[in-house]
Length: 434
Ligand code: IMP
Ligand code: MG
Image (tube, rainbow, N blue to C red):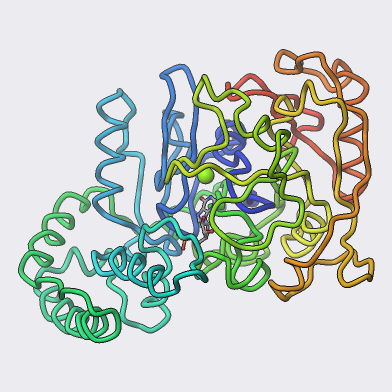
């Protein structure tokens, strides 16, 4: 059986966790393949609300194997904390396995993330500050520490000494900050290694075995595609190698492209972005505030799961979305948070940009050109009736049906799934994805 990839189509926080949670029902294995705990998922189920940063959303099903693939940057303290939290609330975390090839987010990564943002000043990226960018930088520079290293006490000490010596030169010389201490760092990571040992495995072999046995494998992307290093709004992107786009999924778990059958893109019914960078359809007035605070009293407003930052809000940008559909090779869309749009007199869809007097329908590579882009909008009627109780497409208000159909048309891919609330059941299956 083939693997199915689920990716975020915009700038993150599209509700992938919720969609993975739904699709996981049919899968045998659910695997994260990129990024790190810069990601954050909120999942609501019969046990209550959970916020996950590293553990795949499939962990709530008792019969699924959940994997953190070789492509993920793992902060061991965060992972151990998440495991402890799950277990304290009755979720068996021993079905979770972490790749021995995954990179470790080290204390200097978190420190350098912060120092580097300070150094950039007004040009700061607006990172989550979790050390993810510096960790992947070191991976590519062949200066990373991997999970396997934490399990080899004899080898860890010399490796750590050499790497830390380099990092301390950077920390003191370039950033003018205090160096990190070797002994404390070694002790801490040997202890992490001891605690993580039962969870470490050859995750690639688990994925391959499942595929060969005819089981579905769900590959869970983290950040949104428009934060991709190559295709995103550079340099306001996230540094993950492999990337969180559908193309990164195979590398991040160790399978080939022919093993992937479908790529499902999750898109919000509007747009959000946290951190800095161009955002043509951004809404700064009342409508933006209203969308951000929809459901805020239930903790559902548009505030970051990882950092608590208010998210920037905008109308759905179909220029950016169409680009994302193409480079991800999406075969189906899941449209989330349709309920948030209810009660607005009219809705807008951005169908092109006007840049320096020219109409363009593709995403420019240059961040400054994108900053000058004025969205060209198509206006559609809104609807008043709440949709959170709707379970069939035909029962949606006609204006909501029109909105979904128009999005589908503009993106050229069918909307197979619509979510209308945070609960597992608050979904409309338009076409079965599996
Ligand atoms: P980093 O990934 O912490 O380096 O942050 C780089 C950019 O990606 C910043 O704009 C972050 O706000 C954004 N980003 C990283 N992870 C997420 C996420 O899970 N959701 C939304 N934005 C994210
Ligand atoms: Mg998130």
